[in-house]
Image (cartoon, rainbow, N blue to C red; front, side, top):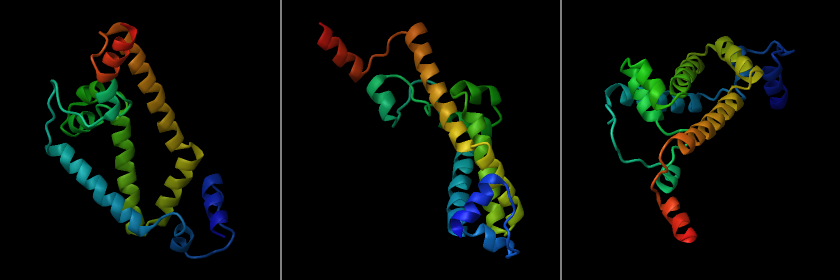
Length: 175
């Protein structure tokens, strides 16, 4: 039965039975997960509001950037979120082109989590149907992959080659 309910959400059809709305939502709208998402996203939004990231050289925990010297698709998201929260929309796009779009998606996810906790099941169902119909997770994943590859290609073609452990290793093999 759970598979049928999830499939109904994916194709947008209404459940055949007239069960309580919260019972229809239960298989994929966990209140525990909603509390976790709400707490995590609230923390992210608060940190973004008060944190002022540096614009020069800074420490990064990105393994890809530390190894290659090139940014991964997610590099700059923290800076982008902070800039956006503080009203610098242009700066947000400059740090990571997809940052503001992801931030907007996280706001919508925060609202969805709040709706789950408030038993606003019709809104949750509508969001889930929309997300499934347009494969939002897949669209974001593809967008980040294309953006990441494009940004790296641009930097390799038009920018100076990065000095990184990987580039030093490759240079030592060539010489």
